[in-house]
Length: 224
Image (cartoon, rainbow, N blue to C red; front, side):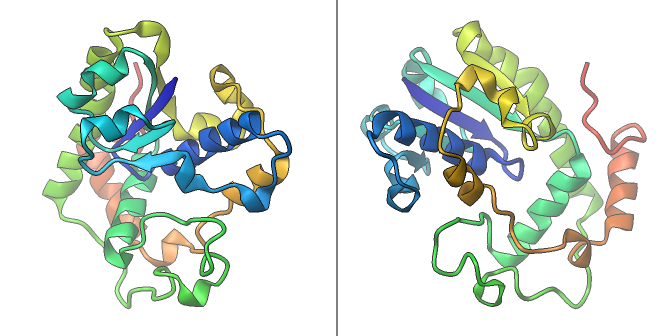
């Protein structure tokens, strides 16, 4: 069984892929050790990989779900991952694009040393984004939830899931359908946060105003 995590990014999808990988490692290893867990042996980050390579992966993390996935989807668990808080999603995106640092990878040599990470250099002027871009992003989030997810779910309703970051990030038991039983020390290692304060980077006042203007006065995804 392949697990496919599909998202537009900045919603914990990389962490989710790592948690599933940790579960598989724990289940498949007689005496699992944190030091021997290698994420890259379980998680494949798809960047237009050929179909043969995709078919042999345990966990696929992707920001694109095109026709080449059609056959894989039939025998896979598909997880659509997004975030309710639009402001937090976009602020995270702004920082990632500015710093060129998209994910905090536990275990890497630099991950515990903020001086050597992309998130060390806080911009002199807080980050902002054009109105048109904010508006397009919000529309894309709703398209993801209301159009892409229902269309994909038609293939196999029981193996398709829509997850909101806020519903599981503080309580992994909410991911019970994945049976996430793994070493707690490994859990601690994986869930370390990027060592930054987003308010030091992003002009939250401007961004909140923009999101409210383009989202009916709310900063949250309106779930029906």
